[in-house]
Image (cartoon, rainbow, N blue to C red; front, side):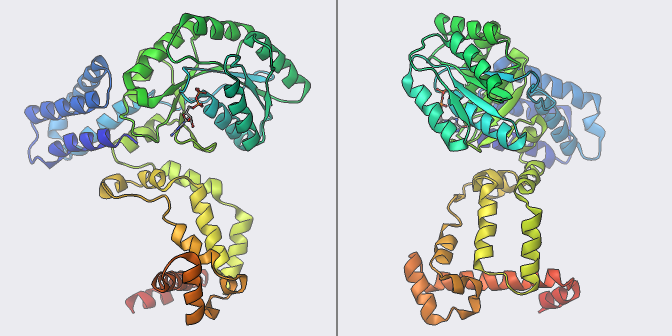
Amino acid sequence: MFNNLSEKLDQALHTLKGHGKINEVNVAETLKEVRRALLDADVNFKIAKQFTNTVKDKAMGQDVLTTLNPGQLMVKIVKDELTELMGGDTVGINLGGSPTVILMSGLQGSGKTTFSGKLANFLKTKKTKQVLLVGCDVYRPAAINQLQVVGEQIGVEVYAEEGNQNPVEISQNAIKHAKANGKNVVIIDTAGRLAVDEEMMTEISNIHKAVNPNETLFVVDSMTGQDAVNTAKAFNDVLNFDGVVLTKLDGDTRGGAALSIKSVVNKPIKFIGTGEKMDAIDVFHPDRMADRILGMGDVVSLVERAQEQYDEAEARKLQKKIAKNQFGFDDFLNQIQQIKKMGSMKDLVGMIPGAGKALKGMDIDDDAFKGIEAIIHSMTPSERSTPSSINASRKKRIAKGSGTSVQEVNQLMKQFDQMSKMMKMMQGGGGKRMMQMMKG
Ligand code: GDP
């Protein structure tokens, strides 16, 4: 996410951090580079200029020149300003109303339908809401179809009216349907066009007036940079929407949209989309994003994701198994699956402070576990639960079955063995024993 911007900001601030003495000249030089980094990220010229001016004023106000650690202070000021630029505080969506009506707006291809599904899934699983998805794209039957596929995938009902060409009517009927069927959230996916045009604006504006949504979200493809900002402005003029959803942040986005949109329309970014799958949705936290942009990682989100996957009963069961020396390859496989549920490897690594820079240029493989999984899948159930039974001939068979080599099987067995020993020791409160083992 925003790799290029991160790198350039790092370089800009590095110069300052490296200097023995800091003076007004190299502060100015640094800020010039920061501004260039922002412009390269496709941030609007005026916003970039204003940004560096504010940072400069704050830096001078706090006497950067005389503090003990001017580099760090500058990083902090830049971080705070980036956070402000992206909206400052985290803003949630309004779930009031009975039912809550959420209207989606945006251009065709921005990711509206995908996001409608993601949000439905998010509300259903995290807030235990009963959601109804509504297909209002009366021009493209394929769009309704797409929504139905999404709905099926996440187990959420989709309301559509074949043959009805009136989206206002459809959305009103959908709300009635929701009330009659115990749904407390209605998400209306609307028709988009490839570019802003009057007809589309009139239509969405009519739906907006008719359903009076509790939350109107504008969905925009972050890859479109400055165009995203212009489109946001056009939609906001008509809808006065409540929040922005930035999609496709998993791609090679430069960051311009994320950094400029709040200043231009004065509406918060509420969610981001980070992939095509239904769970690739995140609440937008300006401060965490600023940390990520500055290469400081996002430990809070990482821990949150781990917690989401944490199941206390499962953990207890595992603990007992370890204590009884019954931790087998099936449990190992289970653990890998838990990690995979936390997100893509690239995404997770990006949350570790400094990892982005340290692993720069390295291909972070989302299939990192594939080999391990294949090996374990090639074991018989009894081999999985009693790894010690895996002798040389079994290893050969497992390697063949998994398309790996005996060496790779051996390596996994060794890692597994070390891990089991370690876990057993931690369990037994054997800190002392562990120290002894480390000393060899
Ligand atoms: P709509 O026309 O606005 O409804 O857009 P769609 O929901 O059909 O999305 C357009 C394309 O973008 C589809 O191929 C989606 O799979 C893809 N897409 C949507 N959101 C994301 C995202 O966050 N990341 C990625 N990589 N692709 C996305």
